[in-house]
Image (cartoon, rainbow, N blue to C red; front, side, top):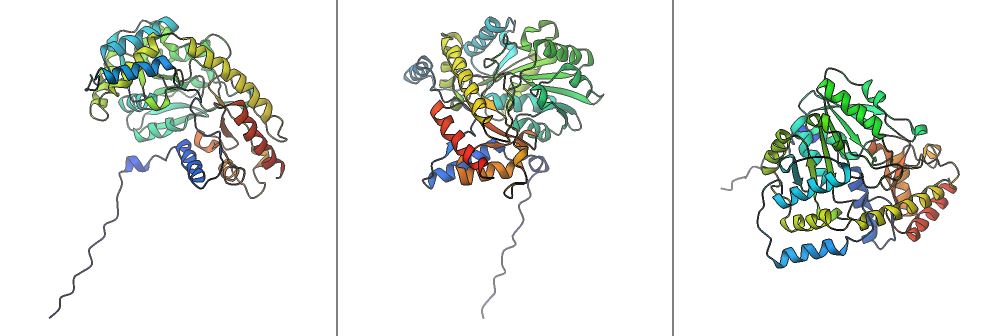
Length: 402
């Protein structure tokens, strides 16, 4: 007598509601698609990835090698060694006249990790977070993951996407828990004035609202004097400064970011980090100390080169009929308006344009939808003049044929 084995019950995968609230990173999606084309032997001009084309300066690499040779490979305190925290505080004090103490600093696995930590610590369900548009792709999803609600502040392209204190003040409600500032901005390159940033922090201090100042690109300010809210000592109990070594020292893959803020928040950040990544890589911490306390000439040299690249790419983009592009004041991105081409060639969105540009012209860009706008694509000009020219020529042919 044979027996029939019943087919096993297949249970559907049920993901948590919090992870279903967020979307994959738009920039990472572009990187993955460009890599697929390269694996097929296709030559792709990559304007998508937001990272310096410079090599990490030699003295920083040497410090990492020395740390390996010295067997500095054990666990460290969760928020980084005392030596690293002191270096973070020292660099910020020298450059921005702040006066943080060691217990008011925490190191993390990149600036993105620092932002995730701080947002997770501060934002709860139903809290409102004021977020200027266009915004860096991960801000919105970090807020949503934490259970917060984004209140979007639309900036004016004709004014270079600048955000003012009055624009922020108009959106404050009793539910406002947090204001996120990012200057210079990714993706627009807009820079808030020191006066406006000061007024936003003053308003937040008066209303009991938190401010996160994402200063990942603070050293890539091409206009006036660089500014950090960390210099506003009288308001320091209501804001946090998040920084990164990634762009300043061409250390994207090293993954070292930091947070400066009230000791109570830093303690909470380190508690959260202790249950996720624990400490940043020990060897990277040694390299970071050398980056922060060593010669800073490399920072200014890279900044000067980015200004040349910015001017070159914006001039090139403006030669494409129908395309508009504001002049970015910082970071290393151009954010051209491609609305004139929406509706052409079956392309009904910036995502369609970026997708077709990659598949047909083999130029990788990031569509504006990932940053909260519909009419733009982001171009990273952190590459060589020769590579910019190759990509611009391909774009000229592509848009000229529409």
